[in-house]
Length: 159
Image 1 (cartoon, helix red, strand yellow):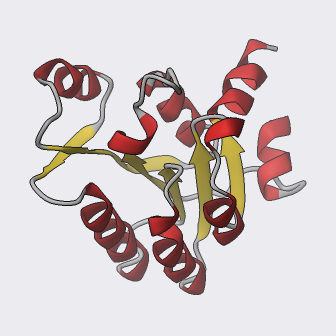
Image 2 (cartoon, rainbow, N blue to C red):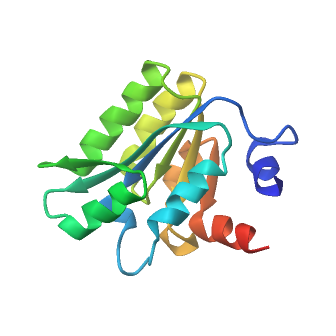
Image 3 (cartoon, rainbow, N blue to C red):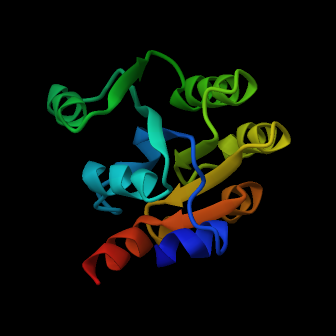
């Protein structure tokens, strides 16, 4: 609950729907050593229920990665073009259509700044989830209403 209070204030987590969008090519890199379960845990720590848990990958994704993501409850979205464009359009669509109360994007890519700003304009809480403090984007963090790193979530659950 301390993490929720830090993110959302003394009243804790918001009620409602949480939509998670994961930028696979920018987060699932060897140098970050990210576990898909940690990303899900970060989104679940935001409270509410999950309305979407999507992992965006390009056409070069291995079958093993796709299987592992699906086994962990992710809806895998494969794009033949730029992952960023599809993810940003889907995130914006969720915001505009009111399909979530909280939008969380796991990435370090500043390309999602306009999508988060649009979600903010529609009154949604937005969360930028970085793979670690060294993989954090200041622009993305500043565009979101809240920001966290996977390290913070994992460290918090170890207490």
